[in-house]
Amino acid sequence: MTKHVKIFDTTLRDGEQAPGFSMSSGQKLAMAEALEGLGVDIIEAGFAAASPGDFEAIKTIAETVKDSTICSLARCNEGDIRASGEAIKPAQSGRIHTFIATSPLHREYKLKMSKDEIVRRAIEGVELCRQYTDDVEFSAEDAIRTERDYLKRVVEAAIKAGATTINIPDTVGYTTPEEIQNLFEFLTTEIEGADKAVFSAHCHDDLGLAVANSLAAIRGGARQVECALNGIGERAGNCATEEVVMALNTRKDFFGLSTGIKTEGLYGASKLLATLTGNPVPRNKAIVGKNAFAHESGIHQHGVLANRETYEIMKPEDVGVSTDNLVLGKHSGRAALKNRASKLGFEMSDNQLQSVFVAFKQLADAKKEVFDADLEALILGEAVGTQGPWEIKSLYVSAGSDENRHPLATVRLQHEDGREQEQVSAASGPMNAVFDAISHITDKPMKLEHFSVNSVSGGEDAMAEATVRVTTEFESYQGRGASTDTVLAGAKAYLDVINRIERRAVRQSSIAAQH
Ligand code: KIV
Ligand code: ZN
Image (cartoon, rainbow, N blue to C red; front, side, top):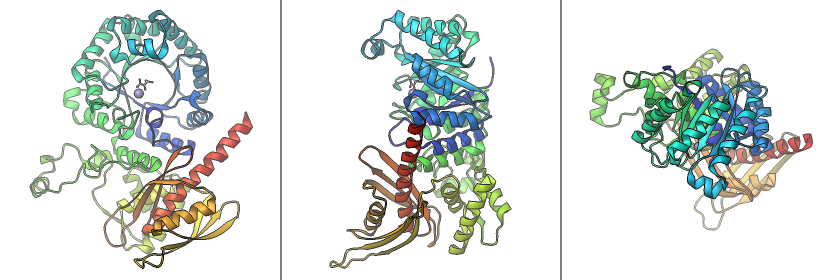
């Protein structure tokens, strides 16, 4: 059996479909390029039939990404499969992932279909997928709660119909390591035609076991693992890409297996996802959390200084966490900036480098020292963060504890179509006054759900990173902004949301015009 475990990343499908993690097409493309850079074998780019926006995003990714296989999800029905087939057409290497539920609960209450009918649908679905591509994945949804003999029957039929990957999802995060290892041992040895397909695990984290279960499935014979960066996904999420990869990597002595992931890119990719979706990574998150390599207690520090291996099983550099902190100053040039960014896991195009360089010079003028964390915030804001149409031209805020006067914000915005407008707003707090002024100018009333500001590095002139979560009548959005000025960072985060909404509306009307 091969020693290579394929990494099938579903950040852009199972991850993106979870509430609070939606991304625009441009953001999905930026994320897909980062996944390609990481060396992911298969990128599940979305669910083509879900919406015209999903279809377009998959197609754009398929046109752009060359080194990873691009996959679209489809239920076992003609419309879904044809939409997926069309969306992946431009890909150098394209896959359709088709699924149907097989467990008694799903058969009876969701599908209202007999066992025979489901087998027939699975066969027809896989055969139709094969008209578009030779690379077809079949999933038996809720496989873990499916009777073994019936699961065997469905999987054998799917392989016979032409499926080249068989995915066994733990859809509800119910299994345990021993149970799933045993199931994979059974399937990979007892299924007729098992040698014609790669077996795959797809574990959810409802009981906090997704990574352990995926590793156990691999021990049982799985040679593809489905995972998402930062563990995002439906409900409690999916198996975390960075965790399963680093477990296989760090314990190669135990598993004897490898992946094609360039692990030094993990931290940058995780941070990019957090920025694009506005969901910060918890400090204590394994592999990519801020504390993952921090040693605070005296005993630990003493040990690490004497020999890093006393308390470190991985090197921070192995996952792209930088340890030398002081980076650049105002005399540093483009090459130094590019080099440093690359060490932090960010590969920038010439255009991105140019805009980051301009922002870097401004920052270096405002700050004495530019740390890695500052640079990271800057790159994420300039190179991959969202752009216009609205831009802040000026912002002035007055605030204080005078009972007779409300905090005031004067905000001037410019639209890319040339419009410029100023608004003065008063509110109970200075940030609320800023948000109110921005909403007024852009004519976008929104409900603020959450606002937070973090300092990304040390010192009194540290960069601030602000995130906001707001709801409109229809949806929830996240936005992010960074600046050495806290109020400006908050204003940028709020405007980031408005820009997302406007760009989305423009995109949707252009898609509608094409149909
Ligand atoms: O969890 C699940 O069952 C899925 C399938 C669509 C593979 O996400
Ligand atoms: Zn899932």
